[in-house]
Length: 84
Image (tube, rainbow, N blue to C red; front, side, top):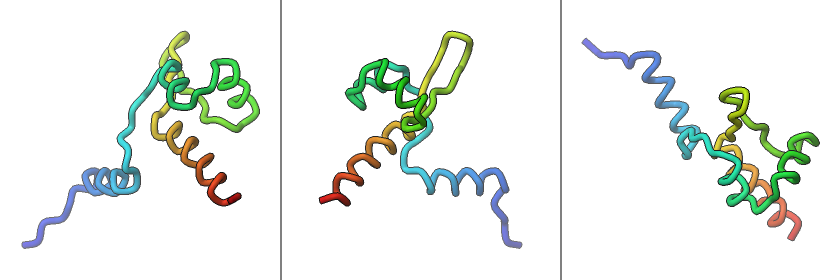
């Protein structure tokens, strides 16, 4: 009798295959290190819709998804390569 994969396990395997980077929350200090942007510039770009939005863990606790920040950095590099 053939065994079938559990639906949740199959879904987890598919989502991990789709993203190479694991889900990880990072604080503003690390976002600033990864992007070299200032705090005010990060929030300016969020307001303009040109930077990933933060996730609020509580009323005074904001984090970003590391994979989204790295993808944003990668997109800037890709634009530079396309323009060349």
